[in-house]
Image 1 (cartoon, rainbow, N blue to C red):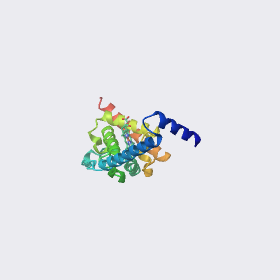
Image 2 (cartoon, helix red, strand yellow; image 1 turned 60 degrees about the vertical axis):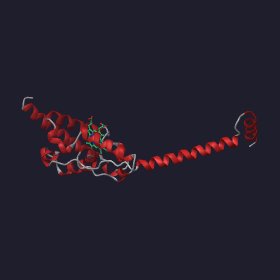
Image 3 (cartoon, rainbow, N blue to C red; image 1 turned 120 degrees about the vertical axis):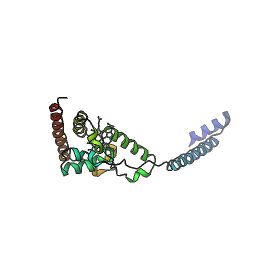
Image 4 (cartoon, rainbow, N blue to C red; image 1 turned 90 degrees about the vertical axis):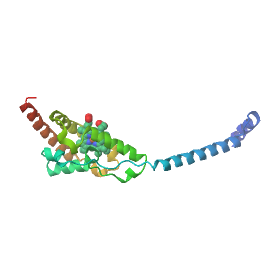
Length: 185
Ligand code: HEC
């Protein structure tokens, strides 16, 4: 307390502003800042993301063109389809900015890289590559995106599920590769 008083005196005598005045200014500035941030967050809420899923053409889906067991279909539906299909289920935080923008970004990015709803439009070579990547990404735990699993605990893959998905992807990759070889491409 003593040293505080001393510095107050120094400030009061040597500078154009006293310590109490300074702390009052800091308080006011902080108040204005908080009000501005709150206002910005409120304004952000008026920006909505487009939650319309692109149409699903049944004939183009993974299920229509690949052997997918019900088990595998369930795993993909639960853990991957929100970002890798046109059947996204939008969670509650898709109504809250800026989370909604981040989510939308992941969905757009995810679909661009891999979209199970338009699987048949991929050339065989691309399908083969995607099957390989699926196994790689889940083995290295890069997929499903960790930030997504943080909220969607139900999408976490058990070791058994990871292995099942990986084995399936490898099997399908071999099948596509054989077809590519047979076609002499
Ligand atoms: C929350 C959204 C989200 C979920 C859920 C998700 N992914 Fe992804 N995925 C992405 C994004 C974003 C990218 C592209 C950016 C990247 O590679 O990190 C991607 C990329 C990929 C790629 C391509 C990687 C490459 O190198 O091009 C594969 C394969 C993949 N994901 C597989 C899966 C599988 C399998 C699942 C389910 C087990 C899954 N993802 C779940 C968002 C997601």
